[in-house]
Length: 118
Image 1 (cartoon, one colour):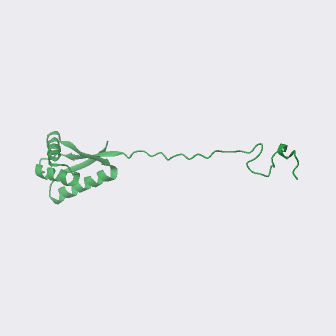
Image 2 (cartoon, rainbow, N blue to C red):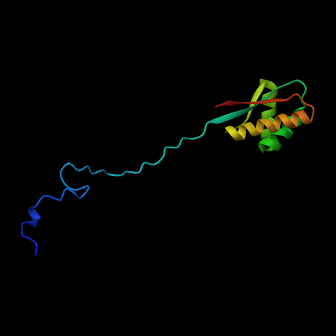
């Protein structure tokens, strides 16, 4: 039968996590911090040789612009020397630049396309 003084005894030092000097910690789970990916502008550069119709077609085919937006962007590029076709994550922007350059080369146009961080 247990002694009635058992409740007043100090805890057994062999029991981990119990007693004086034992360190008790709280486990917290922190959510990983994610940041938005950097965005890049895809730019078309004007030249005196690439037909405007080709640029409009390219904007519709690669950048999925409707005919009005494609004409507006083409005219801006023609008048300003450079224009933004769209803003994308790095990999998508890189792919679109490569597609423009490949189509321009295949159609024997000197059209240039670049990307820059927004």
